[in-house]
Amino acid sequence: MKKEEVLAQAILEHVGGKDNLRQLAHCMTRVRLSLKDPTQANIDALKRIDGVMGVIDDETLQIVVGPGTVNRVADHLSRETGLAIGEESVDPNLTPEERAAVERQKVKAKQQSPFKRFLRRIGNIFIPLIPGLVASGIINGGANFAKNAGVDETQTWMQILLLIGGTVFLYLAILVGWNTAKEFGGTPVLGAIAGGILFNPVLADITIYGEPLVAGRGGLFGVIFAAWLMTYLEKHIRRFMLASIDIIFTPLLTVLIVGFASLYAIMPVAGLLSDGIMKAINAVLEVGGPLAGAVLAGFFLPLVMVGLHHGLTPIHLEFLNTIGNTPLLPILAMAGAGQVGAAMAIFVKTRNPRLRNIIKGAIPVGFLGIGEPLLYGVTLPLGRPFVTACLGAAVGGAFQATMKTTALGVGVSGLSLTPLIDNGMYLTYIGGLVISYAAGFLFTYWFGFKEEMADGI
Image 1: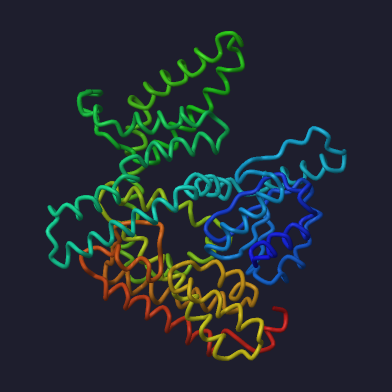
Image 2: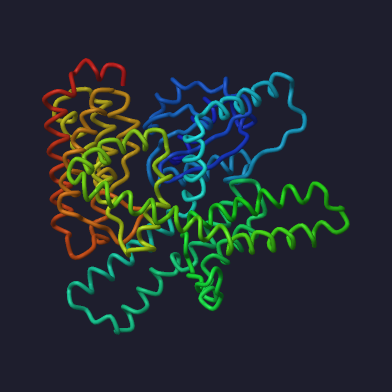
C-alpha cells in the first residue's frame, strides 16, 4: 500500500470516517475537508499522523500534507468516499444531531470578520487558477531569461513559448468570471460572459461619456464585481420568473442588465478603484522604501497562516495588467525565505528526531517557495520561531524594496520566482533571499529556539 493511501486512510479514520465527509477539496499543500459533524474530528490525532505537517481547524478542516502529496491523498480520499473533488455530498436523512452540527459549522463561518470572509472568497476564486498561473509564469520567465541572454524573439520556438505562456493571461478574465459565479452560487458561464465583456477588444469601438472604452479598464476587480452581480441578479430574477420560461428569460435578462451596467458603471468605478490601489501601493513603496518592504514582508506569514494570502492575487495581476510587472511579489516572497532560515537554525540546534525529520522533508520545497509544510509543521507549532521567521522576512523585504525588484508573473515564490524577475535583476533577487535566509537563521538561533520547545512536536 502506497504511503499516500495509508495517509488518506489515517485521515479518514480521525475525521469520523467517509460518511462524515460533506465536501473534499485541496489547494497546493492542504487537503480541505468539510465535515457533517466537525466534533468527530480528532485534531490531536490528525497532527500525530506521519506525513501530516499541520492542521487548521477553521470553517473547513485543512490538513497540510505538502505539494505533490496533496493531489495523491485527495485522489485516494475521493476514491474511498465516492466524492468528486469539489463535490458536496447530499444527505436528506440527517439526524437532528447532524443537522445541529451543520448549523454550528455555518455559525462558525458567519462569525468570521467581513474582511476575512472577503479575502477567503477572493482566495477561493484564484486557488483553482494557480497551477495554470504557475506553469505559464515559469514558461514566460524562461522565455524572458532567454531574451535577456540575447535569443532572437522571432525564432519559432520562442514564439511558441510566448504563445503558450501567454494563453492563460489572455483568457484570465473569463476564468476569473467563471470561478466568481461558481463561488457565489451562480451559473459559471454567466460569470465567464461578465469577464469576456469587460476585456473584449471591441470595446475600443464604443464611445461612452464622450470617450472610447478601454478593454480591461477596472481589471479583475471589475470582473469579480460584474460576475458577482450576475449571480445576484440571476437568483433574484429566478424568484419571480415563470418556470416555463425561466431557462430563456432569466439568463437573458441577467446578461443584458449586467452587460449595460458593466459598461456604464462597473468599468468606470472599478477603473478608479484599480488606479487608486495601484497608486497607493506605489506611493507606500516609494515613500516608505525599506520600511514599507519590511512591514509587508514581515506581516505576510500571518496571512499565509490563516490561508488569506491568495486574496492578494488580483492585486499582483492588476499590476501585471497595468504596468507589466509587480513590485509586491519579490517583497512578499521574502516571508518564505525568512522561514527557511528559521528552520535551518532549528535543525542545527535541535536533537529531536521527529522535528529534524519534519524539517528535512519540508525544507527542499521551502527553498522552492512552498512554505506551508514548514509553517504548520515547524515554526507555528513552536511559537517563537514563527516570530523570528517574520523578522528575517522583514530584513529581506527591506532589501528588495530598496532595490526596487519586480516580477513578471505570479504563483511562485522562493528560488522558483528567479526566472520571473524583471530587468535581469536575478542576482539582486537571490541576494535578497540569502539575506532573509541569514536573518531568519540568526534571529532564530540567538533568540527563537530552545530545545524544550520541541517536546510537544
